[in-house]
Image 1 (cartoon, rainbow, N blue to C red):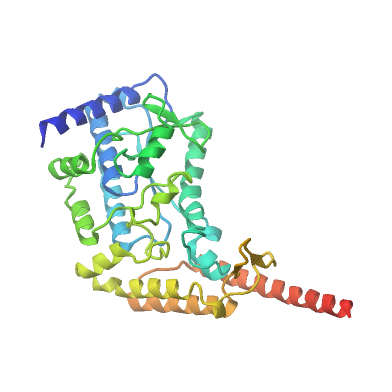
Image 2: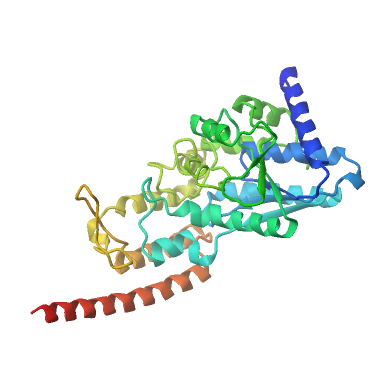
Length: 376
């Protein structure tokens, strides 16, 4: 490993050590997506914990991942494997480490909103998924920890060199100190230990340094090689949200229609994972029906017609017929791939929403008929 990088890592580890040993017990929360940057942060924190005497390891560290329930299958497997390795090692070393996965509530999942409420697949102008599926579940967990402890320290693997957007975000909240107040979460301070590292430096360190919880980072490196892509980061605010579903981000939801093509899933298929071909085909079909006027209701769910200032008509949600077709295709996809794609609790909630919508549509039709009759 490059000696210059070695010295940088030593300084980062010293920063981590000093913050961990600070004279308060505010718990740490590491946003762990399973990608290279969050893996490096977790690696360095674990290293520091191992270097401390047992009586010094008093601060709780929560390693928190988010599962939207429509994550790329290989990424789900990778994250679960690493979580298990970390948990096993932390228990063996008697470290105050908790491995946690947050998930959206049933009423907020992708399928309940798409198939149940008929929301069109997300695009750049209507990206309804990020807040419901990524931001809210993890933010709720962080708030619960802050409520119990008074304050939490959130460790993120963001880096200034990731992109111009990321650099601007880092600069906006940079106060010259290690800890910056979170813009949206009350009683939450943010610690960005690897903010000044380059992408090449991240990869170099991971390639040459085995993880302290055992094994190697080779599976992570292979995952990136197969996908030819970057990961969707841990998203905890709307400022971070542009990283999800953009040209800079590809390890994310396999259903994502914000991007034109899911290059990572296609990369996995090209790398030999042919079992994911039906997922690619379904995702492309979903994107293709989004703007079909025959599949959309005229009115939004609140009963209003939407026309922009430029006179452009914006249709409402999918028709009930299209929603039923999407559900049928999802269930068929489960049978074809022999994998769990939609939970039974989601199907139950979807059918409840359909019944509510059918009643609402019937009532609305009667009201409109009465209004017409009354005007004559």
